[in-house]
Image (cartoon, rainbow, N blue to C red; front, side):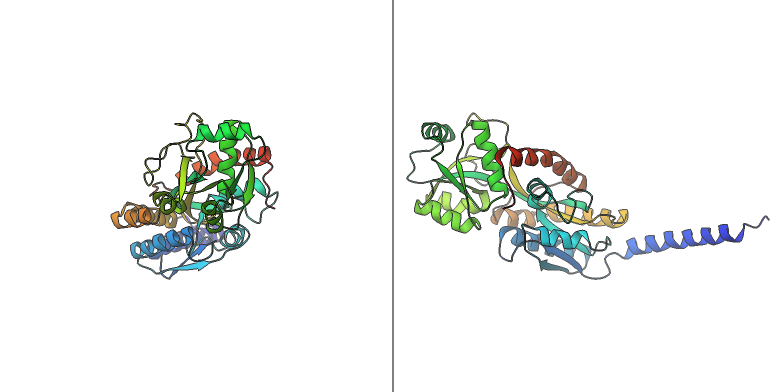
Length: 326
């Protein structure tokens, strides 16, 4: 029998050991609690959904999922933390499109790359965006709003839950399609914007369907149109912008789970499988609906595809409407 040179033999042994260690790691994952970073304060919609999905994910994986709220700088603080974490599956991020498509459109530089820094696992839900009007406004549909805006060029305003947010992007996309310009008034969150809309301090806002549901159903505000391609199952009587005569917009707020880039394939597969089972669970889907979110199915590849689709649209919108991080 011919003997291998010692260096080749040692290399073969090392490779064998490494392969064995990798398989053993995948077989035992997860062997300790998983940290789920949510880059928003406690109590908000993303936090509520993240905690719900995180708890169910832990049940599927047989380990505790510990929620770690790291808000700040429009999700940049939490996203940067996860981007720099070890890619071993024990640190995950639950965040909205703000992290992956909005921030890259309004920031010249970011401490993370929306594509290269993360390994998408799958979706966790979505909620549409909706154009609302004060109940005393003489506007009940999108065509009437467009006519009013054209009759008063530069005088009508609309609010959103912040500068550079998905709500502002949706508003600018919609008004650009309609050929009108409304002055954007940014608020620090959905609640103060809704308060001023109800009180008549501002005539229109763009908000999430989740935030709008109780106010629309109680008659405190009027629903004009949703900015998604299809009607929201949560407000099925509200038409889409396309139905109102302005096709070409499909803007919403979605939530996805990602890990740091470099995740072992077997670990990613295990996380994807567990998340898919969570999202297929009837109790999870009911809880999401009760919170104003629609269940959204899709694995890591689907998340990557949506990011690739939205990024150029957001960048074009930001440039056209001069939306910045300020």
